[in-house]
Amino acid sequence: MMIFVHLISIFTMLSLLSVGGGIAILPVLQHIAITQQHWVTADQFRDMYGLGQISPGPNFLMVLLIGDHVAGLWGALAVGFAFFVPASILVFGAHRLWQHFVFSPWRLSVQQGFAPIVVGLMLAGVYMLGRIAITDKLTFLLAIAAIGILTWRRINPAIVILLGGIIGMFIF
Amino acid sequence: MNQPLNLTTLFKTFFTVGAISFGGGMLAYLREYFVKRNNWLTEEEFLVALALSQTMPGLNGINLSVVIGDKKCGVLGAIVASLGLILPGTMVILILGTFYAHYSNNPHLNAFLIGVAATAIGFSFKNVIELGAVNLKCFRDGCFVIATFIAIGILHIHLFIVFLVLAPLAIWFNRPQSL
Image (cartoon, rainbow over all chains, first blue to last red; front, side):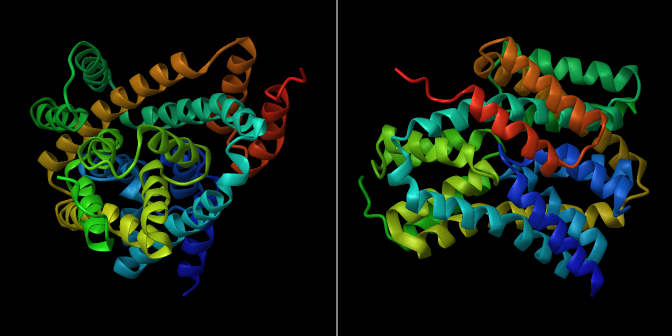
């Protein structure tokens, strides 16, 4: 029972802090899930991140896998509820009040001010996940290749990521 | 071609987007269906919804579904739209998760997922650089990036504290200039 209280309280907090989307709380999630709460190992976290990438829809459905791993289907549901509902209520309220704020100059202040913070969070996320995912020359080359292909050609990233997995099966 | 937008159509549209788009592509599909194909939203309305979704906490796609759903069909619309968006991915990922749990010792699966993660990291890194290039305007912005990166990525300071300290500073530095 306590595990559900834990899951819900932690993911509610993450929901309310997820300014800029899931990628912004990725570093925090990684730290909590692996180091603090020991819900998953580093490898499992990396794998779940990958599964989230190749699943359709929003990117951070991976949190459902953490919930599932910890407490089964009910764990997944609890995490889903805690992670998606609080922020949704906030944005719903903000939308209803938007008419009052849309022309406020402070709205731009918030948007411009937050942008570098979100970039910093994303960078931290890439760095922390990179330390788990990029462990040798081969993984590094694969990442570089992905950046190269996605820069020079307009391909659906999901296809490139899937290809990366298939290539992985041959070289790892 | 211009279907009326009721709850059922709202659900079906978001379900479709949730089933065929992957992460970043979602925005393009939402714009395609809501602005270009059916004129349910103007470009301006879509951009306003997007700005709100990105500024507020929460996944961008889900925030968008709440905002657009509410705008067109009220509270029920917000609920129906967001459920539609996440249902396909939820089903897929839970099925994938079950396979993952059962075959966790399979070396092929492990190798596949290592490849996926490495590639996905490359993709994410590219995104961060592009976002930085678009959004960072000055040296001060860079300072905020570095401060956040060190606080979260290296020192693992609680995110709430980081926000408490940096957000007011960031907003203050970007305050509306008095004329």
